[in-house]
Image 1 (tube, rainbow, N blue to C red):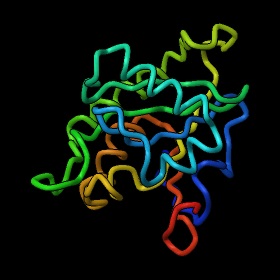
Image 2: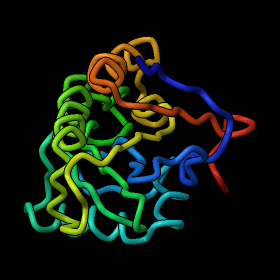
Image 3: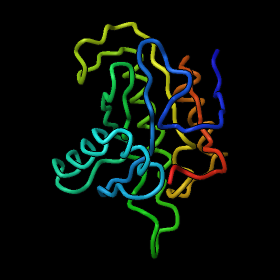
Image 4: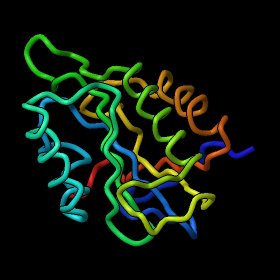
Length: 177
């Protein structure tokens, strides 16, 4: 059974991609904010993921639903999963906007999506293809989460279902400038 593989590198450029499809998973807030942390280099590299998130936020009238996920194909073998796992952003009165149950729910949705692989965003995808997941330490940066809590959630929702997960630590612990 696969486990979580930890590497030093840039999560916006998965190093061990699936021959079929790889998915970069990241934690988004539910208020349409895309301007700090991992989303900056991610949006720079894959502007389509940023544009889709902002359009989704506007479509839903200004507040995204915790635990939902938007999967955006950004290359023939690569997608970005905008997972809504954060209620607002850090600020006065909000120390930790991470919502672990929302992350669990969103990762569960991704596991079901990957298991059936019926990609409504890309009708050329064949059912039965493999999918790998790549991410920074989701929810543990600006969202204020704890990796000691997040790691078991990843194991339960993705690894225990047989999916390969790679977690990237950026060299020096910083995101791309």
